Image (cartoon, rainbow, N blue to C red; front, side, top):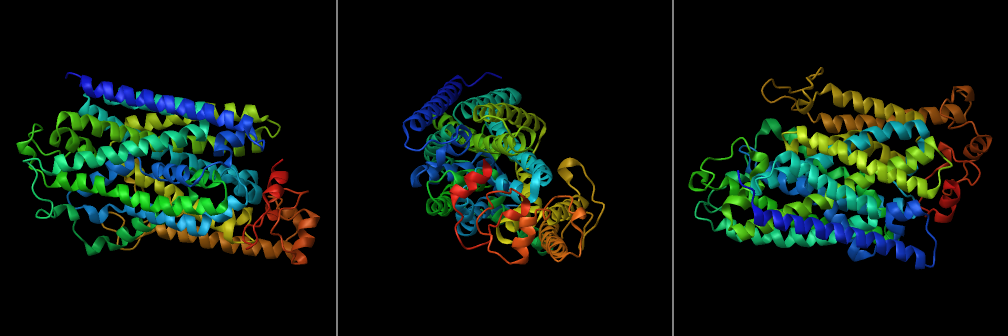
Length: 553
């Protein structure tokens, strides 16, 4: 089949433009560092852009992080799919609510503490072993999420440009990886601004043409796209909605932007305004899905309804229901959406590995430049893994939910406890991790061909698990973490448990024991010790970032 030359030219120009903006942003960030009043560590400058984001840049990059290819294609797929519809397109609205929750409860605490990654408090409070253990679901989540975005772009390019799916995914991955490793968060943020402009203009440009196509019935008359409610699936709907609405505070990409803010107040504003940005940009993919469901595809050049290609409904609507020139613009829109999320996801996972795993555990004396180059190498490796998963997946929204589950079930309880439960420790962290993982695996996973070995209440051979097992696993993980942390804390502090049993070294420091027995306020880090019991983020006092920096050194 012949390649769409005009579309290919537009995509090449778009990719070159984003690459150019990424290189310029990295150069600008370097110049800013050299001419700035305050010297920033090189790795911190690369990972959190020297904590220089103002309200405009921060809000746009926060929004673009969540409004990606999976957001657009996955939402359109859910609305279009028969029996699903808008009712089951919880992701965009759940993500918007998640940003609001993150801004109100989590952003200020994380930014005030002066962390560089989400895993800094894990490493300081729960120790090295738990840091590595918790990194595994985190990096898998980022890989799955990035793969959904790349798969979304691959399907779009294959439909509109007639390019090979594998080639499309590999080229897109290469471009995103290249400008990300060149400029770090500076490049990611400034390309996000450009990409968000493309997304907003391009999608709204396509909507009127698609809605007025002769093969499309009025979406107000054909309301099948709204979905159908089934009482048997009520608990599943609540489960998925909660998963989307509570997950952001445990995502490194989200926290990375919070930590890049100039102040805690601005970090909170990023999240609140980003919430409204997600809601605004949720409308176009919902309309695209509704248009697809209201179309008589026999009257289009496609000739048959795309029953087995629901994951391609967004590019199919753009390709067959809009004029050629408009479809090319729509293609650029989806391409921009993909880049705006995949770069953030890859950079987030690579930053944690470079700072918390490599420098924090494997090579504590590594120089700043060495850490930055290690992060760049990690960007390439994680991008390659995401591309590999994208090449072998056959559903966008399925992988999107799977990536969200890892964050919701395993990481969210850890974030809540490290920030809000003063006595949480490594023992509780390990217990929570184990309980959550076991309960989630017990439910099975169709995407991985994993049959359930525990049938929760209301299980159906036809519909599978109908119990909210994800939320059950998350709550069980949280409760286990609090109980085991409390029991071990009281046991070691009161001498019920001998200190030789403290294998994680949470209570072996004499100063920690004395401080705990005297009920001393531990809202500021001990400058001498960097153990799990020294970190207290539950106090209402704002932790001095200078103390944090001294501890990290």
